[in-house]
Every structure is written in C-alpha cells, then in structure tokens.
Length: 401
Image 1 (spheres, rainbow, N blue to C red):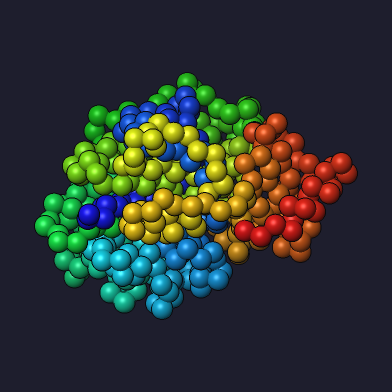
Image 2 (image 1 turned 90 degrees about the horizontal axis):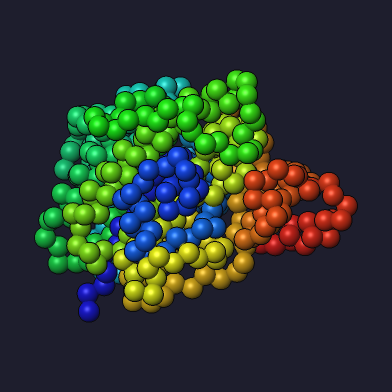
C-alpha cells in the first residue's frame, strides 16, 4: 500500500485559541473549522520556543534550540542539520517547501520588514534537504511576495496576497505527477504584523469596538486601544489565510494527511504585554489540527502534552503506517536568548508545561512564574512565591522536557 501524502501548514503568530473551532468569538475560520471537525485538535499543543527562528529550527530538526545550532535570532540553520526533509526522503518521499524560511544567513542591519530580507537568496545547500524548494527568507510582505528556488533562480515578485500565492504554488506542485508519496511544508507569514497590511478584496476588518477581549487584557487606556486596533487587522488576516488554506485543501486528494499549526502566538495585550517570546499561554500555546486520519479521529479533542518538537516523529510514524506514540505528561518550553526588538520578552527563561500546570524559571534557576492552569486558565495569579506550592514547584523544576 502506498504511504499517505502528508502536508504541514505552518503559520506565524497564530494563537492557539484564535479559531472558531477553539471557541474564539472574534475568529471566522470556516476552513480550519472543517479541518478540526474532520480530524483531531490537540488543545494543549505548545511551541518549544515562542519565537520564529528557534521554533522553526526545532520543528524541522526535532531538536530544541540551542542544541540545533540556532542560538540567536539571526543564526542560520546549520547546513549539516538533519531535518524532517532528509528523513522523509529516506522513507521514499518526494519533499517540498513553500513560503517563509527564516533560517538562512541574513543581514542583521537590514530592515526586518521589506524587500531586503524578502529577496535574500537562500542557496540550495541551505534549504534543509528539501527536494523542491520555493520560498523567501522573510520580510513580512503579506502582499506581493518575492519567491525564488528550484524553478526560480532569481527572486520573482508575484502579485496577490501572500497566503494565496504560496498556497497556489503548493497546489500547482501537488498537481504534478509523482511516483513517490509526497511530503510538503507550506509556510505562511500571516497573521504576523504588520497587522495593517491590506487583505484581499471582499474581506472586511472587524469593528475594533465590537471585539470581545479576554479578561486578562487591561481595560481602558492605551493598552486596550492598541489591542483593539491591532486585533482588527489580526482577525482580518486570519480570515484571509483561512480562505487560502481552505482553497489549497480543496484542491488536494481527500486522503492527504494535513497538519495545521503555528510557530508561536502573540500576547495581544494579555497581562499588558505584546508580541512573543513570553512564556504566557497567548505566546506559547499554538493551534495543532491534524486531518485525514481514520474515522475514529474525526472531531476529536486530545489534551495530551504535545509540542512542535513531536511533529517529526509523528510524521515519520504516519509515513510508516504506524500510530504516533506521545510519551510523557509534560513538555519543555524556553527562550534561549533575548531578541532585542520592541515589545519582545526581556529575559532568557526555561520552563515546563503540563496539562494543568506551568512553571517558568529565570536563567539562574529561580522561579519566575507558576500557574495553576486548571483553576486559573487566564493565568491571573502567579503562585511562584506561594509557600504552599514550594514542593510542587521543586518537583516540576526537576522534570526534563
């Protein structure tokens, strides 16, 4: 029997709770809602590192940062790194990458937003072992992206919304004949800032005043005003990207196994904080939907401890006709270095998250945050200094990810 075709769809800054399937009253995501209804939602999924390059390197290699070689924001993925592409090729798969890479050598002095990083060439030997590669390093151009790669020796600008363009290119590759089973990654920048970037015609930005904000967003003042302004753009980009993903999935054979996730979330004013790198749920917890499974998996909610680090082994299991086995009741989370950009987390930290608890330690090993997620899902009360929790904190601090 031919092994299943497998597709990863990886977004950027998409929070774990930001979806209709997750009960977000602001989110309009009918395409992904259908994927969730036909598959499994891993409700407790986390990123190992809530910042792009660290998480991407971990996702591709199955090895956390800094052990995978990505220690700093501008570190490239080492060219000797063995990725999921190498492993799937060894299993007889044809592999392909489409979209944002964010793991090549780039100029740290160049503007992060704009054509400098969007047109930075990623040489073949730096493309992670993917047999077909077509994408861009970065640049956060949510419209009219520049693509280069296997069939495009020079960066070429494509008109249209980035998610539409990249998903359309992936659909075209999938229509090609292949004697081998296929594994592909579609990597999208949306819904990453700039949140005021245009969205396709027909997609309306929600009224900022009508958005429902979580209780952990400080009410009134500059924080709430900024949150409402940014979320109006954020949710519009969710709608646009959901539509692009839905069109891609509709073009594929029904037997394709689909993974939808994000490399990290966004604080969006929760606890008065913005952007990512923070250990709070809005930054660390990510969507993880898996479709194309057996009938028993349809519409299932799974609360197992799972991380993006688990995806390579899960994917290899599917390729071999096996059921993935998730071991352990906790997953490690960390920020290996400080990214000195506006609003980002200001310290190195490491932590561990279970289904009901989360402990975060400072670089020196002292407790910074301890949350009882079972009784306080909004993380309103930090229990790190609670004497009655001291033994529990010490026990969690000894856990290995």
